[in-house]
Image (tube, rainbow, N blue to C red; front, side):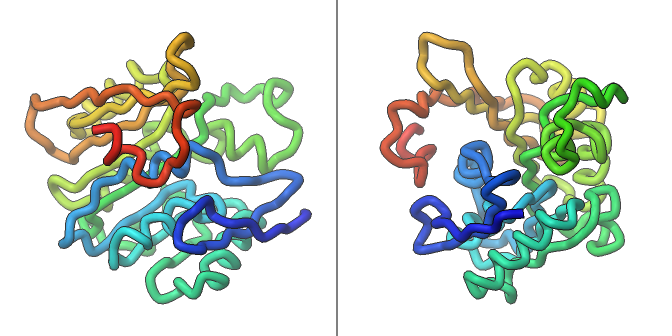
Length: 240
């Protein structure tokens, strides 16, 4: 592992430790953190599949909430811990070395206000020849240690009634995601499509959903072309 210390984009001087050869945070995580709408009374936030903790650290600039990041992979968990310590955020960000399915061992049922997740995007059908030979990259990209059902089950257990769930994912899985949200009692409230050029298909979708939310009032936001963005900080405030 080749550990490097980088700026966390342009977020108030935040620094982040990364594995230069294997694992770096992505634009997806920045956009997810920017998409989150926090209320003044949101006391507890959970970020599943936290990686090296970009989402918790960005959210820490927007609120005074207690933030928990769950990461199952040993070396990536260590990067997250190092990053939180480097930024002196140990009193607000708590990195948990566990899978999201174990979240109830660390949190009370229905005690969380907001859940976020930048999950593995690709399904895993048991054929190792079709995934990356590097185990860390394979787990980060494929649903090997968790899947959509497991994610929504865990989110449902820990979220308060009317709590909010934010997800970033690939557009081609949107129909499946919408069906799963309905299955587990979530109502989608907001969709944001992201493009890398409006002459091409959307590259990702950001989703806001509410646990046991009311039917209706779905907002589909104005699309955003990331190639035209000078900065991603505050991107959705500018786009709305």
